[in-house]
Image (cartoon, rainbow, N blue to C red; front, side, top):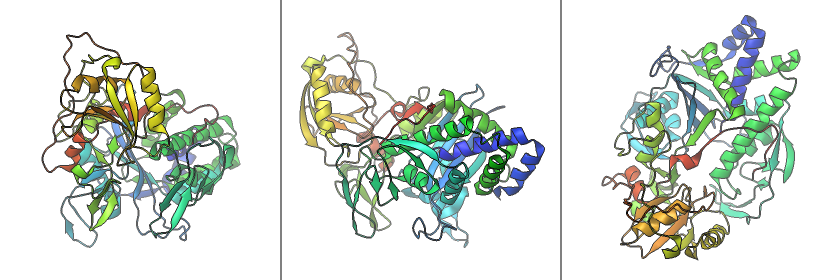
Amino acid sequence: MLAFLSFISCCVLLVTVGGWAAYSFINGKVNRIDLGLGSDGSSSGVGVANYLLVGTDSRAGTGGEYGDVAGQRSDTTILAHLGKDGATTMISFPRDMYVTIPEYTDTAGKHHAAAKDKFNAAISSGGPSLLVKTIESLTNMQVDHYISMDLQGFKQITDAIGGVEVCIKPSNAPPQHFQDDNGRYRVSTNTNDPMSGFHGGPGTIQVNGDQALAFVRQRHGLPAGDTDRISRQQQFIGAMFHKIMNGDTLTNPIKAERLVSTAAGTLTLDEHTSIADLRSLATRIKGLTSGGIRMQTVPTHAPTRAEGAIDDKGDIRLHGNGASVQFYRRDDLMGIVSPLGGRVEGATASGDAGAGPSLAPGVTAAPAQVRVAVYNGSSRSGLASKVTTALTGKGFHARNAGNASVLTHETSRVAYGPGQDAEARTVAAAVPGSSVLADSSVTGVQLILGSNFTEVVTPAVAPSGARASTATPAPAAGDATAGAAQATAATAATQSAPAAPPEAPTCTY
């Protein structure tokens, strides 16, 4: 997710070592675009700045090596907020989020009205300026600096440092069978994926530019889908830092010059972002090695038929075709951006130090009083059975109800029928990161597990007089984004964790 941040950091470290000559060299090689961003980097005061970090899937100059796809999309988009207190928060926006793309005028002079689309369509339709506008519209946070890198740049920089070591776990999940965009049947596992081109492991392996790119981009064949993909990307960051900081890249003049030359030529900055601005960012990035950066991902879920899905896979009708998208809750996003000075139109939550909306106090039902049907709403094989056993061990009367109708849930939810409020809250308290949803069509309590499920814990039962209330607000009619509030509402905290890259590779799927 953040792999190219390490390259920026190394580039700036070399400026510090090389002085003015290195500064001038790098400043002269980076690509520049004019986005009309401010030059003072002061979104909310001295020492505060917001950096938009973008990894695009542009195939330009690759000779079709990664597929013949025109234009570019934002494969990775992160808003990095540098707070005046020294804290840094990085917000990742899933590429398939269903958002409102603001109005814009294209290069041919044609005006386009605001419309709903996938998040990564913004840069494809209107370039970096529309992506910036989309971020600012979603968060009401000013973007001060823009930094991007494409696929070819990632590959070149990885090769420039001689590749890195990563570690891959053996997977017990069955192979994933699916059809690609051309209708061909494919089979993917975490060690062999024809879609990304990754082949390797299990165990510790060395990856060069091509395989490193495939390693961090793989989506098919991973037990937890995008959740495992993020884990891979975070592992890669740690491996990259480990190699650069513990090797001779910074002290060997030949290696240092090769890295600087390659890195500078692959970065694109807005006109007002200087190497000094990169130094400020790089200083914060070094906090990755000590867990000093808070990394968050906007919680999303697959839409249900009640929210407009045209099938049980969570697809919706988009541009005349079926498309896989992810819905988000305004309150979840508000919980992330509010502590950073942001605001989300239509949100009802005020935000709580970046933790996102959470359950109100009042878990009053003991586990022994609760009967719950457990459904697997993810692609993780055997998850419902595993969680049913864990809940039973905590005293719940749990039964394995098999698979949910949609297997693309990222976050877990607890749906409950009339009179089951207290019981639902007890289940939610036992499954960190889950949300509650009142649903008159449900009998009893249902737990639908998402791919980011982590564990079952012992719920803390409040005194019998404690008040319980549902934290999930009713959606505005006709608003698909707000409608997500009635499907699933994961807390932002469960999709965020401090990034502390290890001294050696940690195994992931």
